[in-house]
Length: 89
Image (cartoon, rainbow, N blue to C red; front, side):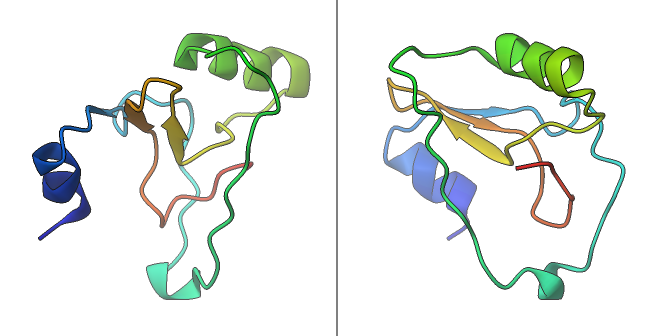
């Protein structure tokens, strides 16, 4: 069972943004991914992807976003990049 189908069967809403997320041109072999980090934004407000991408682009000057996956406070998931994409997160 894939992660996508497992999430759907568990009732988790996944918004597949891989074709619309900012940047994402730099790739690496999936075999080079040896660790996964979980990062908490440290705020108690749920931020939309447009707010996050605006911050990354305007405040940091990034061409690619900061997170492969964003889990919102209600449990919905924004899937932004495949793991072979180099992000700034």
